Image 1: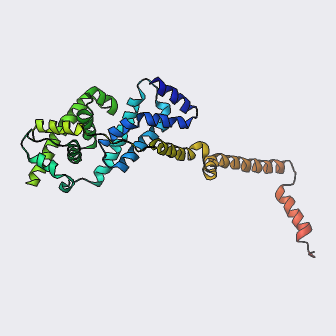
Image 2: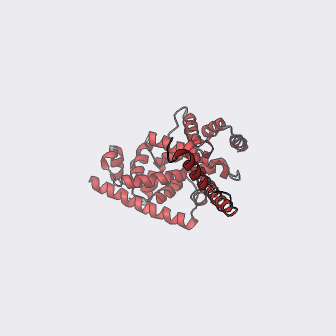
Image 3: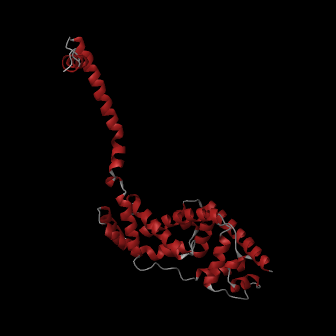
Length: 187
Length: 101
């Protein structure tokens, strides 16, 4: 963290090239976060780039009280939210042909009797999550896929703990319904 | 779909290997930042700078016009021939004489 602060001080004094080191240090985490919201490699790269450019633009607002990583996570979440809102307007339907056979089989199988490959599970979830509102999706993703606590989600999203809990509950219910609908459509 | 199955789905999805950036991604970011800095206020184009200066130029021009009008009235009151009279006199004497050139 201290290293980050030293680097940031140099960047603020005009050493723009040092920002490359900041990007190298944090890019893996930013990519991992954004990958939960966008699976297309090119779009993902654009989102990550947007995150770092926004961070550079707002560098003066970073006071160094929290680790840079947390601050970048906040920016990444905002970028993801904007992206989800734009995408929501564009595509609003779930397409069964997008799912692999094993994902469809898993959906129809009885509870706990079959295992789903990580990639297929992520694809299935991604498809089902398109039915959620962008804000609900961010909350459930952070809670269930990133394993963050309600407190952490509140810090990153700026929402109250009640709002986070309500969003998570609503998202879970909607996901169950969407997945049930998918399973029914297959039969 | 019960809670247990949804939990199982989250668990499986959590194990997915995250996507990694292509080598040289940091250079893409720096290029984007440099492109943006070129359009930053400190390096604005000539038209942008003129646009920013326009209100001041307009005020300066209005001030000059007011000063000229005030000077014309002031000199007229003191009996000094005004610029208009001087120009008319010159044109009578030199340009539009009765016999012409």
